[in-house]
Structure formats: C-alpha cells, structure tokens
Image (cartoon, rainbow, N blue to C red):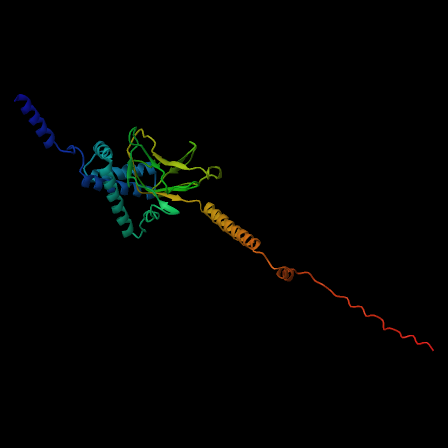
Length: 311
C-alpha cells in the first residue's frame, strides 16, 4: 500500500508540473522580445557613431522595454534553443513580422526558395525529404546540423546538385558567421565536396558540379553540414528554413546518347537495304541498265568501189 501511494504521488507530481519553467518567457513573450531585439540591432547598423556602443545602448533599451535583464533573456533563449522544433516556429513568426514591418516601409519582401516548386523526379528535381527548418546556437551541442540522403533509382551517374536554404541571424553582436559543406559519395568510396561561408540573412545556394572523371560512377549518397562557430560571450542564433536539394541530370550525356542511337539506327537500315538487295537475283539486262558506262560508236565510211572496165 505504501508503494502504491508513493507511485501515485510521483504520477501526480510529474503530471502537475509545468512543461516550461516559470523563469522562462512564453512563446508569445520571447517572440515579442526577439522582434524588438532584432530591430535594435538593425537600427544600430544605420546609426552614426561607434557600432558596438550603438548596439549596447539600443539592445539595452529593448530589454528595458520588456523588463528583462541579459541574464534572464539568456536563460529563456537557452531553454527555447533546446526545444528546436518549437523555436523554429517562433523564428518563422519573428521573420514574418519583420518582413511585414519592412513592407510597410516600402522594402520588398524576401522571396521563398525559387526551387521549392520542383517535383521529386525528372531531369531537374527537388529531392529534399528532411526537416523544413533548423536552428543552430553556438555551443558544443547545437552548433552543427548534418544530413545524408541515400540515392535511389532516379539518380544517374554524372548528376550535379544544389543545396539551397534561407538564413536568419540573431546575435547579441555583429558576429554573423557559419559554414555550409555539400559532398557526394560515389560507388568507389570517392568523395567530392565544396564549402561556402554564410555571413548574412539571405538565400544561400551551395552548388556541386560533377567532375569529368566521376561522370561514369554511380552515386551512393549526398551529404551536407552546416557549422556555426562557438562563442565565448553573448548569444547567437542561426535559423534556416525553405530547404531544397536540387538534382540535375547530365544533359550533355543524354544528348550524346541520343545521337548515338540515331546513328546506329541509320547504319542498321542501310545494312538491311544492302542485304535485301543482295538476296534478290537480278536480270542481266537490269544490271546492264543500272551501269552508268558511256559508250561511243565510231562510224567509218567505206570508200566507194571502183568499177574497172577493160576496153
């Protein structure tokens, strides 16, 4: 009986405990704070004077507006960054509100990824089938995102790739930096890759073309990594969404194959015609008529005969 009571008390304790600690800002509150914080950083960029001083004064004003200290904001940010799925939605709403504010000031809205309409099959296809959004923070656990997409029957030797996504930095200073790496693993265990630095809020496209010496090798997988350097002080966020992975077939290889098929079909037709004519027995007169020999006839007139008369 005592064990049962102890078990029921544990169930009651855990069922009644809130999912979010009391010192952590709610989703709506952290969203409002991040909007104002981002506006403060943007205003610091256009203000005259020392950039670092402007950042400190304006961000402190944003925190004061919400009756927060830097330590309280850091605690809330740490909690929400560990709940990345919910925090991605928060960042999306923050981005949407900032875009709306920009539009009201005459700034054009940032378009979504132009490749998102592509199908999953075809000569040019979007083969991305993983999460739509990712959030990185500069600590030892959450500063790297990696993926691997195994190839299937729609992949061909000689394929090239483009990994695209949009980025949104939100940092306590001007240090906006991350790196993206895209690589392809081939059947003979060869790996080729390319890297690109990410330094701002924009549409990112990491392209990897297939080198000539790998155009006949089958593809095992496509791999990607985004790395955000660690920070010793302050906080930083990198939110990414609108992911696509566009696969391009080698069209020059396809054109060469079609040309070979046309030539082969023509040669076979000619061979068939020759073999058919060889099997038919022709009349000698037809053979003579088909020949293009030119003949000339020389006509020689004989001298008239003389009649010898003897007297």
